[in-house]
Image (cartoon, rainbow, N blue to C red; front, top):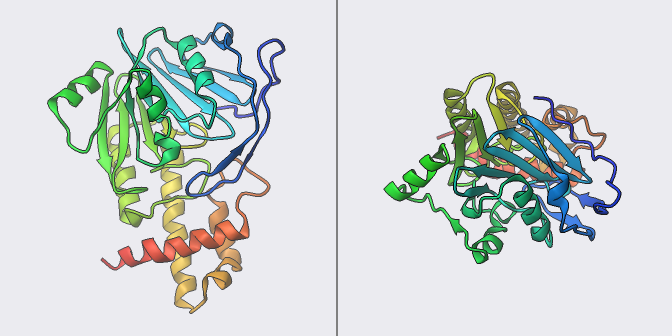
Length: 306
């Protein structure tokens, strides 16, 4: 599925959106301008299966009858909305500061079922920071530190299965929707940035991608933690680019170069650019490149010898 990520013209009479300034980093820090929210946004969103609608800097995509993805372009986290006959379950419901009312209106436009459950693909605030808002409204955050018969039963009600892996953090969740052939990866796979595989290293990322491949096929829709929707070909390319990146850093390190010197090498700059799937003019700054190199050396290379 080709995903158009360009912002549409602002719809007159609905709302006015201000732009965001977004600097990509491992923690996805963002700065946000003010936004005028419209309480009747729900009446303006009507989607058929496998369709998309952009309103200002928000993308709402109905991936199948029971799964919708919502993305606030400036903040970047992909939010999953899964419904059954009674309830709505949210995956990583974080739209950015002061936008929860707007997100609630969008949710209501997609489903009239109350938000009952929340799953976070991992603990970082750009994926779990919306928990308190929705729990205050009556939702419950599902904890998968230890699988129970109750959590398994809840997942079954939404046709979901969860597989824990160690890649971006020590406990990432891969969330599969069996009926719709969709997987939510969290930041195991970020389709807008370079890999942040500092917990599990190269092995952890490779094992996570292997799990996805085993459970998927060429028609599987892959929802990354950030960035456009993808398929197995894009995911596997991401993994191969990560292997190539680690190899290039290791080569330069063996030459005795420091981080600043490594960042100056054309081979390293080219290797980093491979992760730009959107053809941006300026994908990564020198400071961000040096941080990526430093963290690769500190957290990833030592695991290669084990």
